[in-house]
Length: 382
Image (cartoon, rainbow, N blue to C red; front, top):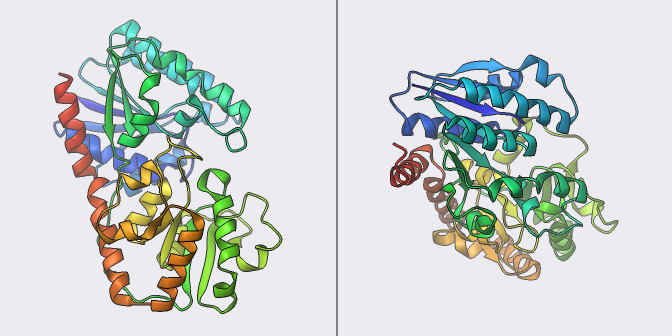
């Protein structure tokens, strides 16, 4: 049997952390596979292949990748996936890492019509399927993605949904037909062992990984900067966005907040992450409850302690001294940061970093493969 892994959406370096790690999960779940075939945009496939430990055969979609418009591309992918499932060999594993509404409909229809099993992983698009803040999640996208609700309500024993986190499942489980098969794992990531230094920078560098948007709590970030102006001015602290500020930055924050004027390449982003002391997680349940945080995973990969606000997603993974760094509101978080900057203890920082390293166990391919395997065995799928 072969594993056929499809990503119908991602291009370039986007989503490569997830896809490369998820391929490792499947390779551990199905060690008897003869080959893993990754179907994606060409450049994306090459990056995933480079990140993977397992050997991959790449198949690119030259015609579809030339199409610029998301909905048209999604519609054509939906037609293509119909024939992919039709031609699927009985014993082959068919896994979809990311798909949009028309493709999701086609996957549901085709798997049921041809009685062929398919795994479908769901991501941040789930947020549009539940109640969400219209100031943060735009109406057009909500109208487009919420079409998947009709698919979720349909009974289909051949389609197995993958959801990335127990808290996300709890937020969206009401969307699904009770008879549908759902597998819950954590957002997988590949971790590379390297020697870490535990000396704090002077000034202390605290950063939001990736561009600042409302979904990631940009308004909380601006409020935090205002509360820390004195410490920033006296060069005790630097607050930085490792990317662009894609929301209007208040005038009284501009000179106190560092950010890029362009999108960073993956190599540039990794280099910047390695140079920070703490990462910021400022999304709360008031903002979203159905999106697995890629920036949380990045923080854990590079063992950067997380300063943040409570959310059901983040709280699920906190262990040890890392729990001390998550607060109920921005005011409390600002006081905590001032306290850390005043003490500036490398020994305490080392404890925080070790707690973050221990959080890696939730996201490793091996632990996710174990969770995956236990659930599909219960479903009688293996």
